[in-house]
Length: 261
Ligand SMILES: Nc1ncnc2c1ncn2[C@@H]1O[C@H](COP(=O)(O)OP(=O)(O)OP(=O)(O)O)[C@@H](O)[C@H]1O
Ligand SMILES: [Mg+2]
Image (cartoon, rainbow, N blue to C red; front, side):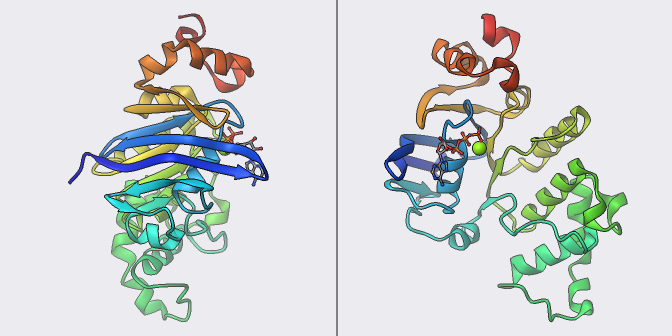
């Protein structure tokens, strides 16, 4: 097995003449948590959508686990174990928390929405569903309607439904967006736990979260790679500091050390 799980070469996405992502070369090591950061409009989400095949690149090549996936469809790469959170449209608000995970498991094993399946068939997935709920700390919420979960817990449920697909590599786009401090801490612990034995690509604005989780970081700015390295290296990089300070530093949470170091 190669040390690199995902690689892009010259990845480029053009929107009507505007280069949202240009010439991006990414190398993501197997078993690591890799952060993709950068100021607003840097091209992070576009990159993310290119990797999960929700967008087709204008140019460039994407290799996952030794395979050229550049021209594959989202469902095909998901079957290869490259899965984004919310891939399976996540949470059905009218179902219970347990039922949501059960449906995700059933869809992971079967092919599509087999809602005609009897309740007794669905119940076969109960054991695994409860394990996944325990993994994300939702055991006590199992019988609650998903729609009535607090926001942070809903994101945890989305992670559980993603885990139901047994991803080799998970991609998370701003998993802590809009969360309270308490929820952020809980999600960080959760990501750390579920990353065991997997690779994670994390798009994240909260640099405290990035610092706490990421082994390696790629900084994008204006669609291009600005810097790469561990948190210490990128936060001390003058180009990175300038890119962040070019926007509102408070809004991106540049730590003291990065702003003045
Ligand atoms: N479908 C689209 N059509 C045209 N322009 C787009 C499209 N999607 C993104 N863009 C532009 O591409 C650039 C990069 O956007 P993207 O959403 O990838 O940035 P981002 O790094 O995720 O930003 P944020 O931190 O705000 O989420 C932006 O200038 C955006 O306006
Ligand atoms: Mg974005």
